[in-house]
Image 1: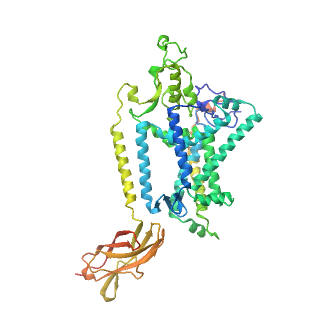
Image 2: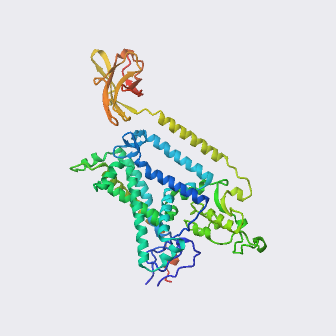
Image 3: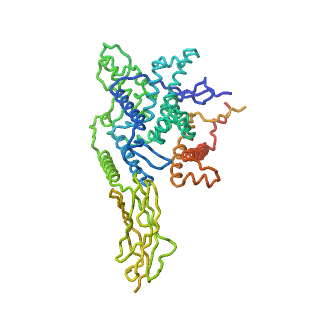
Length: 473
Length: 96
């Protein structure tokens, strides 16, 4: 005996669809209506800039290599003139901190700016929607096509749309892999059909991910998958710019003649055209208030302003505003939260730039021999053995020299002498420090090893170590 | 025959259920892969495991990632399973 579904006030995917048998609760497709306006133009500009950057960067060259290359197998990240090694993970951590703080900063300022204008999900979905619109037509045409029976026209349009989507996804996947495998090698292997199995696999994987996320899931990524969506409201305060419907001005809503003064009829400025609902990519009604699903794309603002213009009412029935403004209070821009975020942001950014600029492209690790505290050798001298690891993090072969200091009269025994290390190589060197125990003041003394490059640039680093020996009284 | 519903009406959509298992596991598998292969060299691992020819780096990362993803999605799936209420409400077991 089948249970009849209870009545539900419709929000997109909650209404049980009796026609579907595969899904218990079927998702209803959202058809965002095409929108034009200031914010739509801003978003399109963003899409062009960001996608231009994404598809263009892997093709740029620097010296004789790709400018931006995240060479995972060789564990080097090349970003134009800079090369980062695993030891440089600290900078990556700082970059993540920078990204996090700027997220808090911009969200506190103006809400979900990232979501509406810059997020890859939004950017790629916009392109996919544009392709869909070009092939299947306007919103009402798309809805009609989906409801229609299978026909030659429908099969043709759907096939064409998915083919274009898949080709674009493949191009996207190919570009993504091009950030990790040099593009010239990748491109050559593609046209000669000699691509390695793993590269092929990842291209297909990323292509499918693009196709699935931008073609099928769309707003469901924002609603179900995005962690930012869940906690973004915690970063809002009463002075954050949010998209809001002016309820006081708009209500009660109702259609009316253009020539009539709404105040005479006792109705608000909202003509209940529902265009704000139709353009919404997540399918909400902004007149119900700011909701979790709203990605801040401002399509509703654009379309409502157009309607207001046609009705010759003032604009901004739906607009970017703040809670304080809605309550009639003044909006404070430079509040403590903003100032503190901005200060931390500047500090971390400057620290990162300075740290990278002052980076010494060599690393010296000193491991004292653990087998014995010290050794007594011929002539009554005392010796400590050290294993030095030198990592050449520059892009050229270097010739290094090692020196020791810290105790007067101490001698460095280095049987290897000066040595060469190739770029990216880690070199092992065993040295000893010898001294007459008479001069020792303490059982454990601090010593220093200085590594200096003899090839051209002034690369030098000094690290601490300890010398252990018997104190003779 | 009593109609025993697999899910209650107030549950989350199917898409969200699938995402709840596959997406967090994807993220943690990515992190695990990065951390694991920073410490261990894939060539050494494949030779230790008795392969004649050492596996390529990208191949190792790929297999390692998907093994991690399998593991983490099992964890997520188990968590989702254990989140089901143990005690059924009266309404769902009553014959309508």
